[in-house]
Length: 272
Image: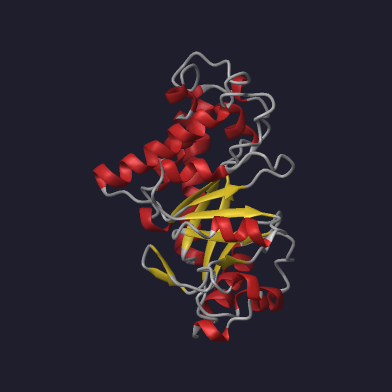
């Protein structure tokens, strides 16, 4: 499909929205990532509609009660259209809401469980990639300088507070190739209560970039949720640290904002 075949607003025709971008072994043929958050997993026609432009990237969360068979049907529908799908997996610990109250054994057991879950999805569902959703409460608490009161390897310094997320990523890399593993974060979700939270995320992005430069371990992309209400802040700081692909997700209604984001040649836009 050529660039001229895409229908985009006239004001965006001078951007790279319709240019291709390689993510791992796949060539994504345009930079718009359609949202499937509110799509019923039984309505395959909706996934057909979202992915019917070949080369589209879909990032699909696992809805409650969705079975492996449901997921497989979704993946097959997207792939038959010549598009690509990442399954987004949340890290959670059943019956535990407070990260500080978890034992080390509970933490490591939960990490193994999400690793096993992802391994089963990769084997039986066969998506193009996996995303670990790190916007959940447990990981958010672990990163928070004022909510994380642990004194073991999961608390204290910036390095220790990032240990949970970085350990999850390392364990998933044992069952998912790095080039098709992504991570979703929301750096501004705790800004009002944790003034140094951006330093935490900058450290994480720096660690991932260090893996890329020194060890050749490049995750497929970092998926960023944009600030919902405070439009005076931005996730642009990611590009100062991480040099790989970034997916920026938000309710973008201002064409000028989209044009500014697309000035970075490794950016995709996920529309709400």
